[in-house]
Length: 289
Image 1 (cartoon, rainbow, N blue to C red):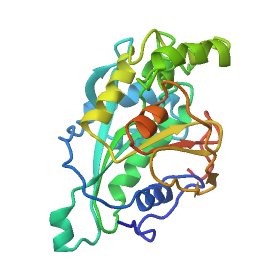
Image 2: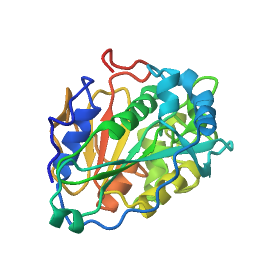
Image 3: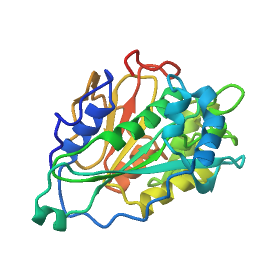
Image 4: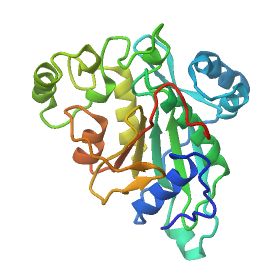
């Protein structure tokens, strides 16, 4: 499977259409399992509720853009009881042969923003990506996107946006990776010197937010996970395939494996490619975004 770059032009210097095209082109084709049930798009009132929460914190996002994303409550909630919103989008294939259309079901891609609540641009980019997924077409295979723009709403909406959730847990160190019960506390104590921004929590998957994402990775079973972060301005990768060397101006720079991280859990343990997009700035979107 290859994505048509003529159909997916790059409107930002980093990701968006070109990122989607490059990621899908790189992942390739194969025998895919059936997609899970779609969450229903939000009604206007529900979408407005999500925007009332998030819009004041979303760099570069106008109210109409936020409402158009049609975020819907997933039914899951954060540590402080805030809804965890999501949105599913089907991008149709532009040209598919009859044989191919019978043999293949949509490629499943999970896009996650604001796992760290102080990386505001990651949520903005995830919202913008919803709009481009709705407009795009891929060549050869449809795509089923699942977007979770703000995984950590408590940190995102704190008086001062916080990397950690309301219980002080770094959600990106709270996954059940091999030996994490032993290794994560040791890494936190010895390598980070008990940095409170990187506490892995009392136990793997102790937090409702990480439990929710873990459930999506299990039930939705994506062929690709895109995790959006800031502010290191690089492209990272965990998984069994050859990684893309760059996306736009972002160049591959593998930062390593960390106990309890999403990349380690998905890419290394589950064999599920995880591409981490690190924007240059956590608070300011690129000028052409």
